[in-house]
Length: 358
Image (cartoon, helix red, strand yellow):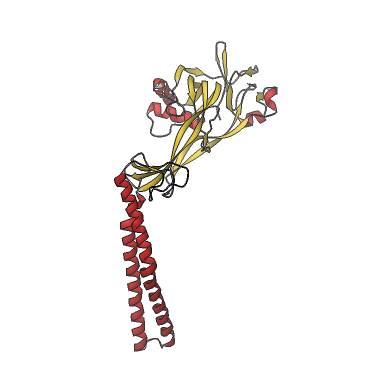
């Protein structure tokens, strides 16, 4: 069976585990979706091309790499972080202007000018004026608007009770009903005008101000990585990848550049009889381990490897990516015998690679 073998070296990389947030942990090898994405990007594909991937490799060490994480809070806080004004309030992006920064973890106030560093006095004045306006609106609602609403509510209740006491269809009943409708219309109009005023004068303008926080977080970064990647696909796709092999720039983060050591179209064997030992760690089909077609080294046999549910490809459903998952067992120190069922041998001189598509 025909396949493409890629031998890749990376000085460092992070293959991010999507469920991690504070500490961006890494997979020991790139997941299928990461490799497939890199190959599609190199070939300029805009639609998914069917392919299967076998991934094995090793790394020399792992270290933690610090980075500054920027986060927009869901609400604007007056006493912490960095006060910014968004240039487009509908988008969270780098398009913002710094207004002021809090100097201490707590006890600061942008509004009152307590322990802050001002970056833009004009924008800070705008923020303070909006906060003052909000206080005025709250005071107006409390002392004038809400009492009027309460009065209208009492009058509507009185009219409703009066309607119950009157006979329906009488002239007096119709007059009471008409007056009740007038009060309801007046109440609705007053609420709409109040909401419109508050929205236009305060809610929309203040929504442009956001609290931006920054904190120190870490990447797990693998060092001195060697990857052996086999690709099974149609002849057309394999030839495309081979032709664009030097367009594969990175695997993992955009800065995780690769050095392509080898790209070769090979014939895989599935009739090898001897037991073959692997020099690499790999993602393998757990069912083959359970069926003892893949044998673990005695020192790893007790742990049984690490089971991951890895993304492969996805479909867009209702605007969301729904990934197809693969149950992959990460193993080190293993051998294979009884090839077939997705298990192949790539023999190239003294080099023998166990290839597993699943």
